[in-house]
Structure formats: C-alpha cells, structure tokens
Length: 372
Image (cartoon, rainbow, N blue to C red; front, side, top):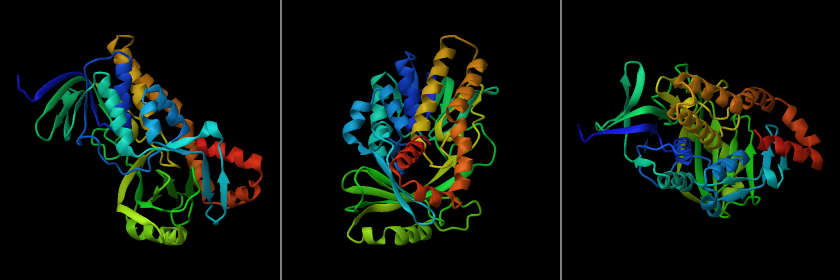
C-alpha cells in the first residue's frame, strides 16, 4: 500500500469556519477518524471583514470555543448606518444583539485547535486537486503532490472558488476589497455600513478590530468586469473617510476577494459528498456575511453524517434532510435579501432614517439589521 494513501471515515476539504465547525461537531458527537485538510498551515491570514453576528456567537458557544475567542474579540453593540442619500443614523440592537469582530487569523486557528483537541487529524499544505470516485460516488480527495485520502464520506468546504461543489449554475459573485488602518476615529463598539450609490446594491463598511485598528472595505458587483476595484475603493475612501484617515497609519496592503452567494439553497449533495458554507454559496446576499452560515452548515452536516455513520437512516434520506435543514435555516433570509437590495436603492431608507430618529423606531431597526 502506498505511503501516500490514507484512509478516513470522513474527509473535510477546507479548514475555514465551515470545515472546522463540521470537524469539531463530529468530535462532539463521537464520530471518529475524521481528516481535515487545507492548502495552508495555521495560523494564517484570511481577507475578511471578520464580523461574527449574534447568531454566530451562539454557534461559537455551542462549539466550545467561546472562552478562547472572547479575550481576542472586539464587541459590537451598535451600528452607524449611512443611506444612499447621505443620511446617518446610529442604531442599537440592545445587549442581546451584540456581535463581535475577531480577526480570522485568530478565529480560524482557535477553531482548528478545538478540532484537534477532539481527535481530528489535520493535514496542512494539502492542495486539493481532484476528488476520488468509486463509480459515481465520491470516495475521497487527491492533492497536487499525489497524496490521497480515501474516505467513506467527503465534505466540501473549500470556499468561493470551490472546484468540488455540486451546483453547476453560473455563480453570483460580489467582489470585495479592503484595507486596515490604525488611529482612525470611530464611535466605540459600533460598525459602520455605508450604502453609497457607487456600490449599489452593495455597501462599504468600517469594522473596528480593536480600540486602535479598523478595517475599511467595500463590496460591489461587476458581472461585466468593467470596474477597477482599487479605483472604486479609492473613490469611496475619498468620499467618506478622507478626513478621518488624514491622521491614520495604513497597516499592510489592500486585499481583495470574491464572495459567492445565491438566493436559493442547493443542490448541496451527491453520493458520498456534502457541500457546506461558501462552497455551497451559502453567504448572505445582502450583507455578505458568511462566518455564521459556514459554521451553521458545518454543524448540520456533522449531525447528518452522525446519522449515516450510526445507521439511523439511509444516506440519501440523510442527504435530503441536510438540504432541507439548510433551506429552513437560511431560505427565508436569503430570499428576503432580494427585497432588501431593491429597498436600499430606493428613497425608502432615507425616509425611514428621517422617521426613525425616535428611540423606539431606532431600536426596532437595529434589531432587524442584527437578525439579517
């Protein structure tokens, strides 16, 4: 037998929040012989706004990593919203709707260490090149270097650029570009969302990562490839942050990445294979949030695999149930994003902000935003 061949019950391709959440929850459920691979070693940097929503905090607690994340997190308890017409409003969802910003270098590494503590095997620098098949059934994964992992079940968690997803429909993509600065004035414990017509129906943001450091970025759509990301970002910075950046210090270079999304959930499975997180296009179509969705789908996939491994039902029944649970978790929110995209380009946001200066209305809007 080749030394480059490894056998596993479950192989997970990708060690972002989706893949590590699946690995952790498999360990929590008592499922053994799971191998997690990634083309990077950890800790590693990841370009991302790094926001974790209130629902995401519940997932971190369920995965048993909250006590490790908490000292590294910056609390968010409010939102500064800027409408396309330039109106500003500060919103609060209350303490129960608090979110955090946690740098992905830290977040992902904490999740990985938790998976390792539960017996998951991690193989870094594994550049997945192709799936392995037994007939039409996925039976593992092979790296560019020839390392092979044969597995009864394979979980695809390789993100926006996934080569192993099931969905063959053309992708919907948002493009994002962002940078980091120290010493930028901002309202403590608030994020900023700027719905500028330059970016419609998407938005720009300021997310504080600490009392001193912020990330500022934009996401936008460019299906015809006519926009220059750096030029668009500079226009946005000049318009909204020129004065506040005048005394700041830029940290590192600007970085960009695509965000894959869909209004519809699925398909997410084939014989021997489940697709989770952004590989399954389960990123919020309005906010581009993906950390919560990735972790949630990872946990659902783990529970699905537990049922199959313990013979609680047939694979096909379990796979269908996985897709149904993902639709139940995200379907309404994703479909509602279509309406949000239309509304944000209309006069309604400016009207609401004018009306919403009343405390009760502001709190209601803040809670609505927190639940998107």
